[in-house]
Image (cartoon, rainbow, N blue to C red; front, side, top):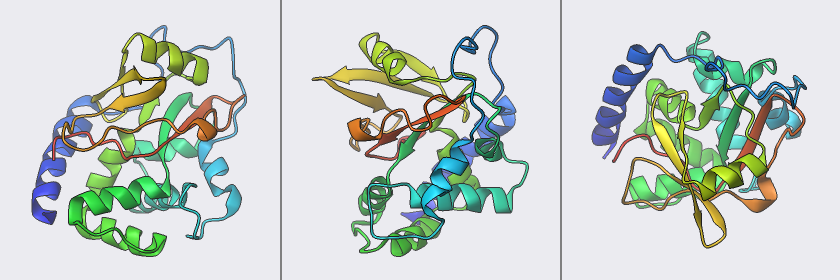
Length: 217
């Protein structure tokens, strides 16, 4: 399982990060500069409750650990721009439970703690793989507050991510779902009590209950 996942995502990483020269700058005409001008970064928001793993599966400790791990190993990674609040972007942020469910889907076992979840993730994915997956959760150049996400869902809009792939936003019985590249696992859904994180700033996030996958595993 580990070798298959690593091989699929390693191929994806080489094909997209190198080919696209991934950056988080605004595409022409895309930045909604008339609104949301604060420059508090999402990284600062994620770190607000500390950087330690805890027992709350509905926050973002594992996501934060993944971001820090990539930045430590690859300081020049585009992931580091999550620490720069002057860069406009939108993140669909998996909860800790989302990562736990991913480990369960990949290994058949759901870890009992966040620490064990992180350890399991590091066993099935290297830093380049984690980087590619993280960038697949980032929509560069735009600040998509919840009304814009709802509008995108009604139109079944495809969003281009910083990883280079696309995610389709759809409305399913009143819930906003994100269609990724793996047709077999459940698609992530936006968590209603986790929308508009860091609203009023250029960087905004919405919690999701599954991890987006940029390839069919």
